[in-house]
Length: 157
Image 1 (cartoon, rainbow, N blue to C red):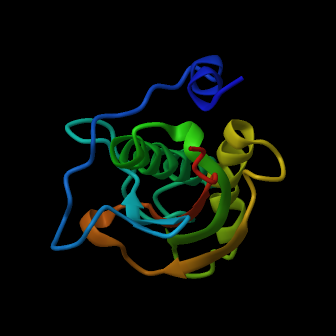
Image 2 (cartoon, rainbow, N blue to C red):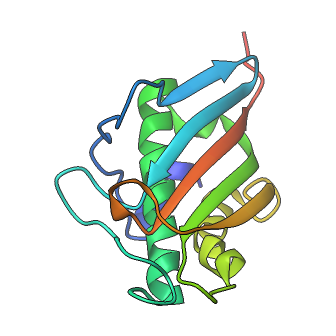
């Protein structure tokens, strides 16, 4: 089953492409690695998760917000690469969670993103190294922002 079939089986569709919030590249390929700029917990002209986990949002809300970040990254990769099936593995997930004072479950929040990536790419290739970091505030009051690094499959002639 390819990535698009897995997305469909999970009842998910790629969102519209996010609008960059500043002067940066949404994705940058260097060799067989593709870096994806931080993606927030919002969909262009649609849903968004705002507020701090542990105050305004539950851990489950945070996990859904993290999954929204993954979907935005996948849209950027689809537009950049032309085919999500070119992805060989997830290398790194760097997650930022807008957190209330005394909230210490950032890894559990970012598990929402990690689980979705594992479901899409497989248990080993879908899980890379990871950091889950607390922050007091994110741009636009978003709940989660995640930056990604993917490795591409070797190109065949």
